Image 1: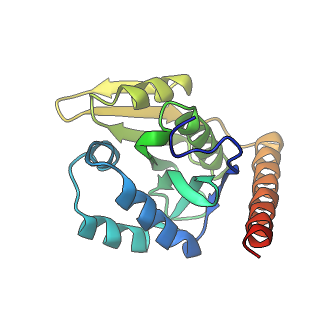
Image 2: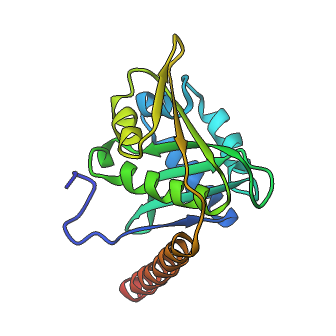
Length: 193
């Protein structure tokens, strides 16, 4: 447990929608300078983040979020595919410093791989800096082939083809996540009344 996480904190994972753009922006702005650099591959300004978040959630992406008491603390983005199904896509991840090393990145990565698989994406790429040992370890859990160069590391995952079980798993996860989100909203409303 971190200093920011209460013992009875309400924790959930769910897909992000266009109306979550403000939560995404706020999450990215809370990232410390090192976490920002790890996420974007270079230092970025608040101005960059504000504009990035405005366009990050749309039909060209699928994002999953990790919430603590309704506050977005971690994000996985699947980006780069243009149609309902596509051959290749890129994934990017960010978890706030106080919430790192708790399995959140692994959970988000798994949801991203499943979403890619179910959209016909056969090759999933994740790029990160060579000193980002956490991402290297997580990518290896999903059988990523890592290629190192002077600029960083590229992980490539060959996603298996979608099947009825993988589609069912995503639908079941989405349904459970939606129910959890609704229950948390209801609980917060009751507590504030």
